[in-house]
Amino acid sequence: GPKVLQIPSHQIIDMGQMVTLNCDPVSNHLYFYWYKQILGQQMEFLVNFYNGKVMEKSKLFKDQFSVERPDGSYFTLKIQPTALEDSAVYFCASSFSYEQYFGPGTRLTVL
Amino acid sequence: GDSVTQTEGPVTVSESESLIINCTYSATSIAYPNLFWYVRYPGEGLQLLLKVITAGQKGSSRGFEATYNKETTSFHLQKASVQESDSAVYYCALGLQQGTGSKLSFGKGAKLTVSP
Image 1: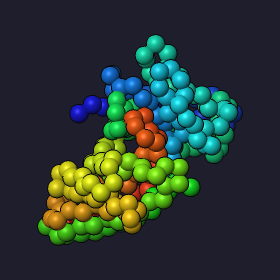
Image 2 (image 1 turned 90 degrees about the horizontal axis):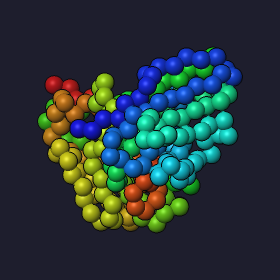
Image 3 (image 1 turned 180 degrees about the vertical axis):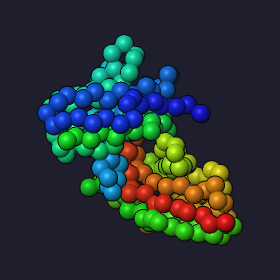
Image 4 (image 1 turned 135 degrees about the vertical axis):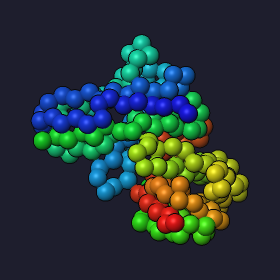
């Protein structure tokens, strides 16, 4: 079936650095999402994105976070600067309708 | 607020036995959320197992079924006879807006192990 790809699969960075997580969504999808899962906790919604704009963001989507999808390329989540509490697995998803297709996740470790 | 409470793993069932994974929800931001079961097989990404967007309806896929019960705010996942290949982590989720593009609220997941 359709696949969402995420690059990289694992990223280790020092606190205060910038990181960009990349998502290659399903080609004809219109809606894009980021979710965050801290070890041992449930996956939580961060943000959704449609037609070049953020639709909604949760309280977890701090001011240091930003998303974009320039010219139909990767859908990216940028964190600048990173903090220790940003360590988590970040899942990208895309959808055309109700069904969201998820990527395998990027494990971010902030030291 | 909006939340999902589900059976948490591990759940161990013998092959050909029946299965039920409980899911109840609380939805304060929307009267009738869309309801989903997602599954993550070992080594794979999260994928949709089944969905129901109308209260009172039943969804089914791969022998699994779940009924949207608005009276009890439940959406339990059932299967009459499980197979070893059903071993996976199962997540109940709410769609918190009407229509497409809705954010999802997930339960913590139930890890199912089916023994031969």
